[in-house]
Length: 424
Image 1 (cartoon, rainbow, N blue to C red):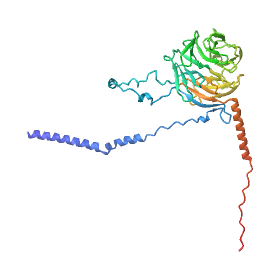
Image 2: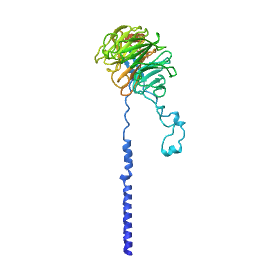
Image 3: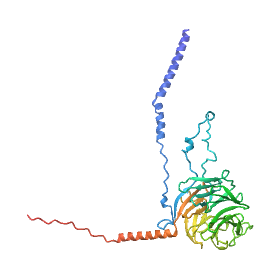
Image 4: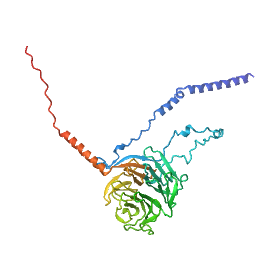
């Protein structure tokens, strides 16, 4: 019995010693300060350096000391992400089944209908009477409608407000009717100002670029695969004429014909401008569809065309052409002389990667769409010839004032007055 007691006592003593040793380990300085070390390591991590912001005031073309003709102003990328949406504060309570299953309530769920869509493949653009920007996005399958002041966004979406296949471009007339070209469905869909489909032009092959002559009430549709520009009455949608020869499989180079034309623009006199992409040129026609002239040549340098896409005409009659291959927007006169260019290849503001479309509104705002690696539309301000002339006069006057100040004779310093000596 005593042997058993001794054995039990020894076992207990061993257990006590083991616990005592474990307690010392926990109380050791190394263990006590292990958490401090972890904290110190965490605290020693330096915050990531912020990327330097671009000075937007310097985004002008051409660069100083030249008189600027284009200024960067803003960009658009899609609908706003609202982390503090009203739906979160007004959301319905989760049911006990939701809590048990760990699922969201109906108001918390992000559905395709309320998802904040972003631009992915923007192409053709237009501006309505209220100054809102319309952007046709090929990849999203929707028309984005941006309030350019507040950046608030409305949409005409495939599967909700409309049925689209592959939209390419959009044009808006002075009554805010919206024309959308759909290459997959072979149609031009017509929406009223409330974004409701009211009509369509059918039996097209691949409608891409659109333009509206608001004075003559004409709608121009570029059918790329047919190598033609089709002209319709903008109100009745009845066909009027066709420009170009079809059925030659993009092989024609003769003036007045096309090989994979992409976009079309109309100036204030009703003249028509078409980017003939595979022939690396721009062709010009009068309001009756008669060929006037052409310009352009193929090379990889500024002043040439590599892959001309979007086209627009400003208030001074200059022709602006988006070149997807060069990553530039170039301005020409009607004789084909290069007047200016905007941008360079890249992803910074004022640069372009895969630019596609261009639109210039009556307020001289210029919009350029890009598609790779993600979509965006950059906004610029075109400085008119009259405004540039005024800036030139102001610069000359300022230079003269500076020169006059520099050559102005400096008056000699006046001698200090000496007080007369007082005789004692």
